[in-house]
Image 1 (cartoon, rainbow, N blue to C red):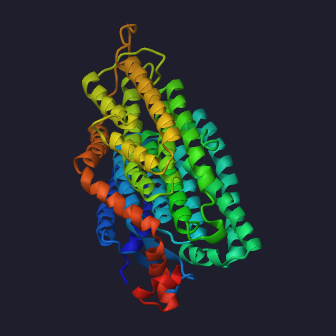
Image 2: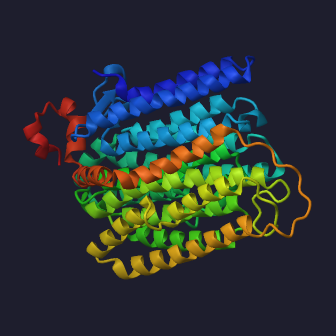
Length: 513
């Protein structure tokens, strides 16, 4: 059995523990270890992506226990793709933070690795209880990274985040207990096998558990009305942490996509499609409020936080269609929105450091040194986030609109998405004008500190990924469509996980449907 699937979890765990033991050593050494460990995740993610690109499912049962009793890790196209996106964003975040942000508090690099462990584990796990465990791991690291550097704004934001997520964790346990009580299993593949066999009373309880789970995932994804905490929290975090936080909402979206396509899909009997009436309308509301929040933001970092909410709404519109075309659009748009959102957080920090008197505030004029370079980065990030041509956001939104048209949801989707895009364009145009044009009113300014070169490399790397999604758009789109077909037909996932226990051969997949 190949041990490759466990490396994205094991490597951050070991390196994070090592960094805790290295707390007395020099900052430079700890930075080097943190960057090297994050960089090492890239080839691992690429190898996993290549291994599953042909439709293979890699199943890793810890302790060699047979499913569904084992702690199972499963790598398919979707999980491998998310691991690669996370590795790219994490590398940019840790490189940027090593320019000085990591000095604001102790154990930054150890916490960064532990959060990577939690994120990767959530993408890889094959059962609900361990999804809860990895959620808690990444949330504990998230709380600590959010408080990195302290300050009243960060402490205030962290209190709201902790309280809301504690409620979410309690709901998760209730949901897991309910589903286990009626099915006797928490393995995702086994749940999808058992649910169609439930009687009416048990199915009603399973439906309650499924809706509780949906509420939990909505909190993690910052789906409104649970997402009002996000702009303030992300906007107050250090830039390197905020870049990685751009992945966190995608963990919640991933959980909705994974669980409700696999476990509560069309073959789930009386609990099939339990999330469909809720996800799509909530996504439209989230999309609209995210755009309006961006328009009303007083700082660029706050605007970047609202744009994360906006991108989550767009992404879940595609997921909420629960069609192959919607899944494909969601996969492509996930990569785009994560790269573009992380890049905008880093650009916002560059702007804040450059404008020494006003920071990233949009209502206070200030000088803007290095205007050509900073302005160019802002322009590229703004075009990407707004979804304008020729960058990948435009292609992703076209895929979402096309999927909605095919699913018969065009009127609401097209109206809300296009109107929200216009609002975002106006908001980012206003931000650009305030930052780069309104500079003449300031007569005295403190000298701007030098921006480390690695900061520009980190921003440039993320924006290069956005461009790459267009330059190699055919390959990425084909991969997204293959992933969507795999999600729409979960029989391969079930067979890969359960065949060993059932003693089946590939031709007997129908027995697990």
